Image 1 (cartoon, one colour):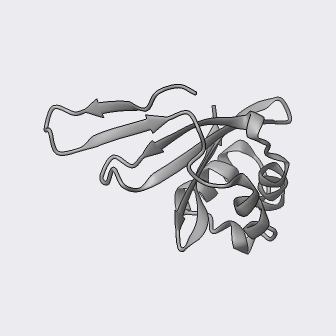
Image 2 (cartoon, rainbow, N blue to C red):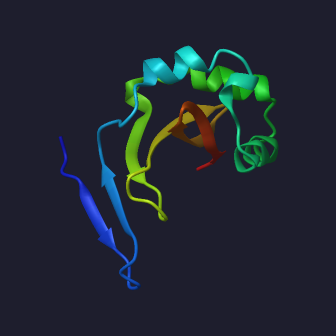
Image 3 (tube, rainbow, N blue to C red):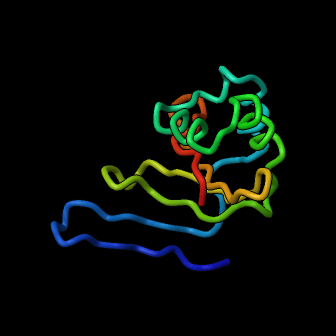
Length: 115
């Protein structure tokens, strides 16, 4: 296991933390995200899906096919270092994808874009 990284920005207000083990359970994410609606896509994620040329149903399939091997990193948000986000890298039709999950009561996808 790699160590947690800490990044301090010049304004000294925010610290971004990073770790290389998932913060959230992928099994829980996938158990929740069984329909398009239950993916809880942000506007940014929906925009990324459209930009790639995917249907939302394709994005759902991508999420359901994720494994621990696709995990890339966990990181905190820039504005609040107590809120964690898990990032996964995967492929769809030879396109590298970056998928970022966060939890606020339910899981949601905050970013879905091409690498």
